Image (cartoon, rainbow, N blue to C red; front, top):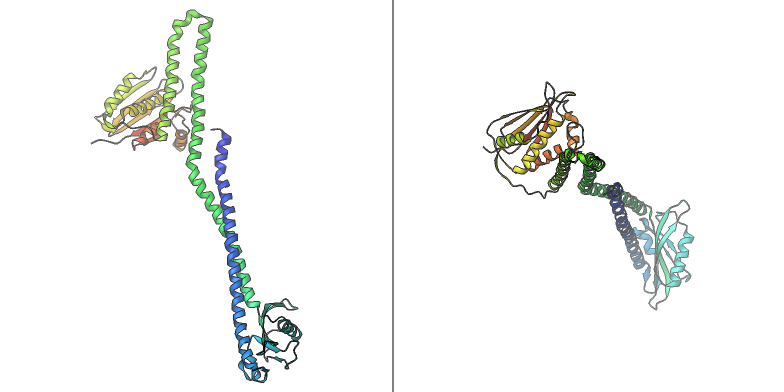
Length: 415
């Protein structure tokens, strides 16, 4: 997996959040438009219903058969209430017009007369809005009435102030718009966080894979270069073949160990390594590993007590060997041999040395990046940590008071 591919994976949360914002915005627009339209329709129906009631009541008061009489309207309570109305003859001239006593909106009478003429002429109910000079808006309801022979002779014009209803509708519009924007922002933020959380394991795995490959290449570079140098030496001087062959075998073994470590770490990380759990005597296993480990110029001492643990013998052997190899290689002061002491008791293997020690603050970062305690890149300590975690154990690292690093591997202890 290349860096650009990893960057694209890291950019997926933003891409998902963007699409989620677009989808949420589309849904919010549709739902908001439906809500605004429904609210507007409901408020119009409410105003028209109130004015229809006034127009129906006035029509019953002014009609006496085919005669239109307006004197009874002046005595009714509708004449002094809002909404205001007018009974007008239109173009028929059959009766004098009447305007209600209560003036609720400052609308010119001539405009009401024009509406009455239009309704009588068309013989249809009219509804709509009128605009005042100062920006006011009024709702009008015009109901024409006719005689028994079907001739329209007048109309009742009702006018109501639409300002409060329209102001409430405008507040709803702003509320819907603001709520939609908040919903889009919340959806984008939630989508980004959810996608980031969902993709974090994959991104972490890919990053670890890149680091693993880089560190493995670094570890293999030195033995491969040495192996090539030995091969070129044999080509130039075949007589040195016998002397160089053991070194060649050692380099091949070292490369094999590196490759085995990579495979083991990958299988442990992927959870595909099946543990062969069985009771093992940890003190005997450690003693055998120490006997089989080339001491070189190191001095290795062991203190053990009978300790039985439930673990995978092969993985535990590999972990202890890695701890011992790390201590032998890096647990020394410049110009002197390594001094390593191993203590086995109570399900714990404690490996201490007299080297420069390790900074506990960066130990976890070093393990995550597969670096050894001495600063060189490698998989040894990372494998120890993975073996400990696979057995529900722990790996601790700290420094001794008199110098040197201490690695403590704890495994499930069998009483």
